[in-house]
Length: 617
Ligand code: AMP
Image 1 (cartoon, rainbow, N blue to C red):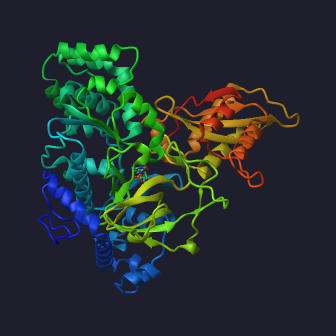
Image 2: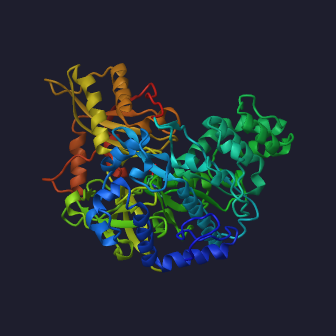
Image 3: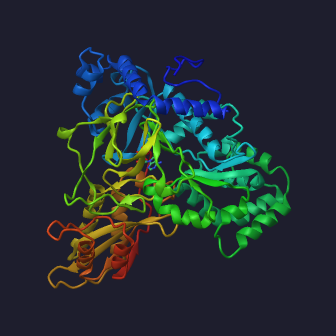
């Protein structure tokens, strides 16, 4: 690894020409061969730069030593560092945690007190992300030929942003990246030419953005070699949008005139250029495909040269695999990377592997990585089971308590073991628990590879929302007060993420009884709808944003079930190996059989009638 490069970046980011795939692969080989040395240097560099920050000074007491760092700096959760982040948001100098100036705060989809967590970001970090993105290209080129002979239809979006009291921008990590010069002024890379002009990606009106990106993608259909979005949920939303809007899109293509409701000047200008002139034959062709009764394989029909669909389908996104396979008609689903607002972590070195076989190799110059071994909750040796990408109920890990913290380093993780990821970043996070549970599946050179198992404490997720059992309990508790005031008791509840239609929605199964006579009460639909809305109003701000602003989650549903349904659920769980003594009603159901048990006993269904309140923080 060479030190220094023209951008004055630290030596941890080697410089090379991103068009040169061989050079990219060589760098990846170097990085994965020298994991131990690189990790040591990363930690050294982070400590040397930041030892004088208020945060580290308190623990290191002027020492720059790695052993002292690991002995004295605690492993923390967001709540531990929140006061520092809030001070920065309110105008304190960013050097309380980072020697490099913090230029913005990245709002994560994880929440704290109902609001998004905010992660520090520096100018240098944008270069680190660019370096990471560039490395995805040679990996793809290794498996798929000719990606420089056409374009990528990536549907990328920006989300609302706000300013903190001190004037720092607070926005999601991808919005921050797409709005940065690193993205906007990116050098031409022949392997990475998008059908979406930047103006359509950067348009803050998500409907106009979606419409224009699809229009550009359709017009350039013969050039498209791959399609995708960041997450599977976003790509499926685009297909649904197409289902609703293909007639208008075709009419624009036929006439060469962009619909009048596209008022964003940037979008209008670039889309008109792409449209160029009336294309009636192209419109006929697209209309013919979209008009067909079944949309099975529609991606291949509309974009016939497509080689794969690039979307993350691991973790909570695994629930969309079958729907994507339906629309994709067998096209490979490619999850290229694993990243977060805190840090970009890993790359999938075998991008064509099946969704359930995907592993990510952590890139050792991104951050200093540590791992908390994860213990199982049930002591009877139950194993984690991949079930639609999420762990089966009743086999969650035991929360690793702060007291037992004993981390292992990246080079010391063991094959087959489960760990929670802990990061020390270049941006001011020290020994920070990300909350993701990973399993070691193998090694690329000396770099371990990890399967994403699940996120700690998350039971429900449709899009980027992450609802924990505790969030759900709080929301249900608020809603049940409404029925209680009418003499109705909520005896049991559970939930599941229904993604059988797009967008998916949360479903709550409620077993209710009348106080006193133990009968199923007569239910007033207005009251029950109010319960649905109350649950939604009580969920965190990411849920409410997805539901209200992004329309990426549908109205929440309560399904009232017959008496005895939860006994039947218990019988089923016990038949599957749960111990009768320790049985607790799972607050979220993932297994198809369990869903059927509940589903077959539903007596009434109610939906939320209004989207919950949401505004940027
Ligand atoms: P955010 O904080 O909103 O940036 O979300 C980051 C989180 O999304 C990660 O910590 C993971 O829980 C999840 N995530 C990101 N990439 C992947 C992936 N490739 N597979 C599964 N989960 C992912």
